[in-house]
Length: 511
Image (tube, rainbow, N blue to C red):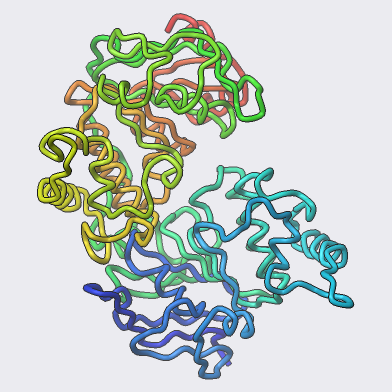
């Protein structure tokens, strides 16, 4: 028996869209098999078919050579198939153990035996190097740890075939490399893994073979060893993709944002931003580089009015906005692509059209005397969908929750860039996007810069910061430890500064 999983000629339709059009996927036992495709190519849909969340219109599924009919996830679990979803399915005020045993609680004399389960979870955690505390509450642990809980949930149910849906979209670089090690260990222990992703670096790092799908159709299956990142990218997007960001030199003008002595506390009441000073000028992209957790999130929230400021001053276009509300900042000229698209970027149960006018719905032509003008809203939404290639099942009528993560991100970027604000704060703007979409967003950010707007780019992807920025400010423990010209910066120099070494302290002090 050569394949552990075979999905043959799978077709899955939704109203108005064929998500999977005759796709075949064959996975060998003990391999990491990548499933590569753009945002909205049909990757998650195909895996949802395998996991029993959707029923296909045509095609067959074989597990270990036997034809199977997977009508719900319990059947998938019974066949040894487990799935870690892109947005985790965890109960936040439950402990790790309670989440893992949910639906499969071990009972003795009619009572749930959590201690027995916790012991078993500790052993599993140790065996696979997951290092998870069974008694911790989900709300108190990092996103990376939450993902490990999802992995343990599968292992606790004896899953042999593990599906990872975009597992690195929310992880820091260090957590990503730890996850890669965990995957290698799982395969060594006899598991088979299907990895849904569009990150070519990760495919090259861990996958054995890769199946590419484009716009719902099967394109090819290749041995990863023999395919370069460029080849994989062009198979995925259907054209050559440039990995280099083309841009002229910046021509910075007047100051748009001036931050002086800013102090902001985090949710544990500690100073996350600690006396930070920074200036961003019109006509430049200033990138903020730093290891996650050095105050980036709190800085963005303070600048956008989402978090209280302890002391210091924020000036936007000469206005003191230190204690100004969110709408006032938006009207002065602030745009914000938030780091957490679900929490701060979208109203998930609103339609796509409604989300695309969230910043402007109360202005003409979208409303008059407090009454919304549905036609104008739809017209604007359609323009943005076409320009930014936002893909969704039912166009502007789609409920945003039903869209893929990458297309949700594109919708936010479209809404914020279209307003062409004087200052655009972009927090992880390309998180979860494929190479084609990343190239497009970078182009748009540079266009804004060239129109004389200021862009503050905050990203954990060092490549992105180095490629797109004109100047790079390095943040460490809530302070800017130095500002360097992007053209002259090296990865090693930035890495040292990100670890707290102040090689460029004097220049940082002068800015």
